[in-house]
View 1 (cartoon, rainbow, N blue to C red):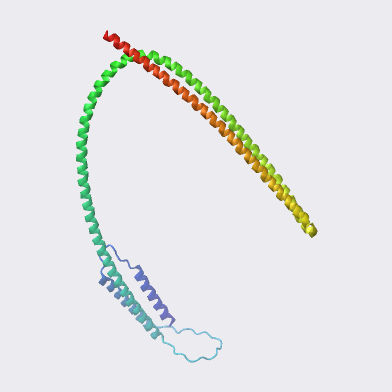
View 2 (cartoon, rainbow, N blue to C red):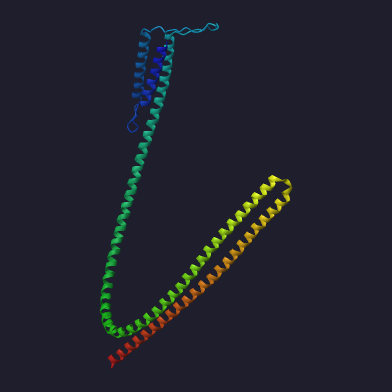
Length: 338
């Protein structure tokens, strides 16, 4: 009986493995008749195996001696042949259910393939129409660009001819004016170099002053931070001592509660004093920062004023150069006319 049950379970597991391992081609056409025929052939093979198991001689099961148990009502025991038939019926029902599932799956797959083919045909037609439209647009744009390029080439040729004529005239004028302007430019360059050296010296002086101010601010910040750290450590130590004393007094005697309260108020007052000192330091820092900002603004304004003066001097020199050039040209014109 146990052998028949084990064989039935093995047949059921083999059927499940065959159904799970069966590969269905989703890309090619699916034929439901082939799938059903394969399932029928597997069912016949399993029935043949079960009949062979039932016909094979079975060794009588070894019965072990069991302890005496209370008597129970007689129960109807099923023979191994009956159990094998029941297992066979279960396999047949399971096979029929799996067959229905396979048919439904094949129908769904055929519908999906039809939908995919329709979508592919539609997408191809749409892509072809879009490609044709793009080709026509590209041809139209190329023809327009070619016509525009031809017009531009003609305009460029006319402009190049005019530029060649102007270039010749300018070269003649430049040869006349360069000789006269070289002397004036040398003198102007000397004056501009002097102004530049003065401006660089003033900028370096202002930069050194700003560096000194920044160094002083950094040193003050460091000193402030060190003082705050020292004061914080001292305050923390005092508070720790006071708290230790308070705890010792509380443990020793309850009558010292009033004194503990006074110590707590003293610690609070010390903390308030520390906070007041910190606020005063912060106010002082803000005041010093405001003074430094005012100093920086003054220095910047002075630098801007010097820069404006230098630019005005350069403009006046350039105007003088232009006036001298105009006078020289007037003299040349007068001499040429005479």
